[in-house]
Length: 112
Image (cartoon, rainbow, N blue to C red; front, top):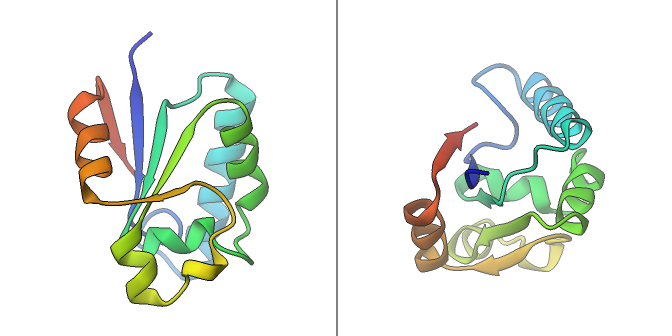
């Protein structure tokens, strides 16, 4: 099976209103879990880091993905910049080298 990496650079999916972006991310991750075709890694940077933080509506889906073996990598520079380091609830806080390596080694990269 090809290795897939997902990129979350927004606090949700798409360019719509914030609430819609969150709903779409929740639906996408739920359907991904249901499909059983899980990504190898999910990367979170810029506004995307908020998805792994306390209060995110997708924390349960991300926790389940992590429990099933998907690696969640969160940009350290971004969580520091947004001041949310202590609010990260899932994933590994890593650096740009981790993100770069994940993208370079993936067979497929999907930006959400």
